[in-house]
Image 1: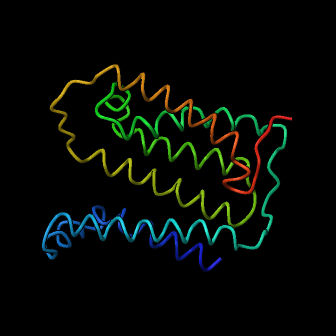
Image 2 (image 1 turned 120 degrees about the horizontal axis):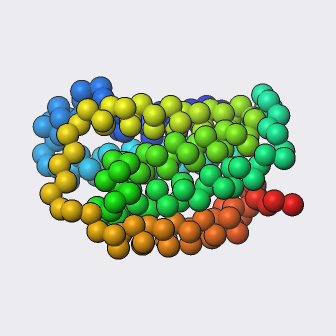
Image 3 (image 1 turned 180 degrees about the vertical axis):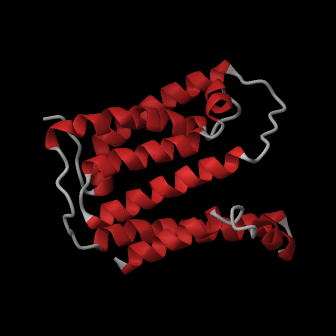
Length: 186
């Protein structure tokens, strides 16, 4: 469990710098924006690797028993998760204009759908921390003025939909190989 907690700490540390008032001082202390982004990316990536490794090492300690018959709700919730995740990574779409940060919405829905269907301690720690972080981040980013110089393009919504559905299908098919737990309705 220690590796998982270390990974979560490393991953979230650079992601809360703005909220802690440390982002700009760190940028100013480094020689360039590129140096800041390189360190930010390396620390986040190291955290992500440790999260994945730590989750696989964590002992299985059941805290509560998920309702087996309701697992299909998690599968259905993953459809907007994938669409929102893609929409958060494409140029301005109507979905981004409406949700402001569809990536964070996708992360929140992802974490809630996985909390719904996993009752072990490591899963609760992993998905609960992502749910908490994305909720806090959405609230704090509301205060940031979002300047959108271009008008949204409907094509990016179509791309988000198609790529999101494609990702949903691929991850659904290979979930067992990727994450050690298969998904099925049967």
